[in-house]
Length: 512
Image (cartoon, rainbow, N blue to C red; front, side, top):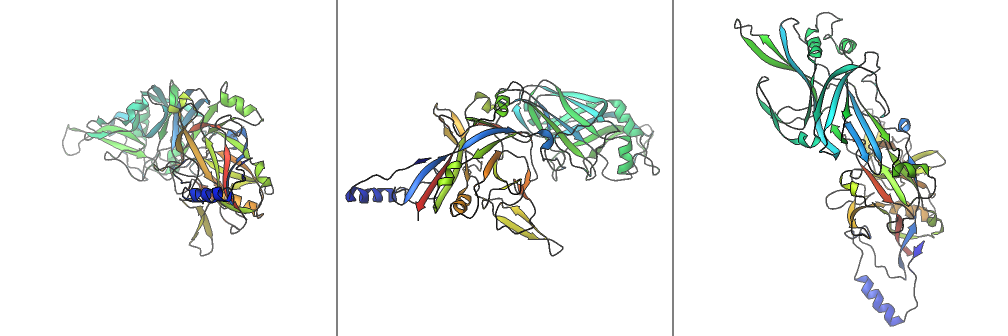
C-alpha cells in the first residue's frame, strides 16, 4: 500500500500549505478522482493507492448463463485472426412464420418468381472490409427448436440441407439500394439478403391452409413442415455481423428481418394479365431464435493467460461468452475506521494496434463472491434499488437504476475515459466507484469480499446489500435495455503488478 506521509513542518509553512490545498480540489474531469473531494491536506485528509492482486479466468461456454431471446441481438460471422484473443465463429438459428393463421394460400394459382431471406443488419464488430459468405440451411425436423425455450450460446441444432448462399462485404451493408417492382420500387439499407433456392419457394407456395393438418393452418402444424433457418459464415471474414431479429419499428421501406416470397398470379379481372406481388413472413411471438458462439483461443496470448493461476500483469476480458479477472485487495484489511470520500477502482487498457479493429466491451461489471452463500452478487451498496408494485398487490420486483454512479462516464456517455499511456498511445481507463462498499467495510459492517471483473452481455444477480429487502428478484445488468449484444468487445488491461499501467484502488479519506 502506498500512502502519503505527514512531514514535520513549521507552523508558518503548515498554514500556507493548508491555504494552498484548500484552493485546489480534485475534479471528476481529471483522471484522478470522482466527484468534488475535500482538500488533501496531509494532516486530516489523505490520498493513497492500494495494490490489487489479479488473475485471469475463462468462462466455460456451457456454464455461461446468458440465454438469447426474441428482442436480443444475434450474431453471424467469423473472426479468423484476433492477435490477442484468437478466433470466434458465430451462427444464428431463426424461425419465421405467417403473422396470422390460417394463412391464406391458393396452391396452383401462384407462380414463383424468387424467395429471399432478409436479415436486418444492426452493425459489425471487427474488420468490415473482408467479404464473408453467408450460408442459409434448413434446421432438421428432428431438432427440438421451440419458442418456449431460451438457449445458451453453446447450443447447436442439426441441419437438413443448404437453401442458399450470398457473399457480402460488411462495410457495404450500410449503403442504400433499390428493390425493383415488387410490387413497387423502394429504397432500403442495412440488410443482408440471401436468395434461396427456388425449390424451397415452391414448397412454400404448395402448402395449403385447408384442414387441421395443413401447413398454414396453425403455428404447430407449420413447424412440422418447416422447422426454421440455420445461418452461418462459411468463408473468409474477420468480423461479426449483428442482426436484429425483430423490431417494434422499421425504416421507411418496412425493413426488418423477414422472408420475402415474390410471385406472379393471374389477374382475376383481366384475362391473360399477369400481376406480381410478394408475401412477407416475419418473426412472430411464437417463433424461436438462438445464437451459437464459439471461441477458439488456441495459440493466443489470452490462452496462455487463462492457463496460469499466478498473479497477472495483463488481464484479458472478453464479452459473453468470454473471460473474467479475479480481484483481491488484501491491503484493505489494515485500513482503520475513517471517513471515505472516494474509493475508486481504476484500470486501463494496454495498447495493441489491433484495438482499432476490435474495440472494448460495451459494459463491464465488478461483482463480489459471497463465500457463505457460495454465489456471486452485486457490489454491496453500489446500486440503488427501485421497486414496483405488481398487479397482485403483493409482489415487488427490484431493478438497477439506469443511473447508478457505479462507474464513471465521460462526456460522451461512455463507460471509459481516454488517456495517454507512457509511450504516448491513446488508451482507455475505467473507474468503478466502490466508495459506499469500502465505507461500510472500514466501519466493520460488512466483510472484505473477493471480486470479479467481466463484461456480461446480460446478467441477473442478487443484491449485495446486507439490508436489502428479503425476497428481492435478481437485479438485471445492464439496466433498462433490450438490446443485449453478446460477443462484441474485448480488452487487454494492466493487472495489479503491471510495471507502468497497474490496476489500483485509489482512496481519499479523513481520519476520525
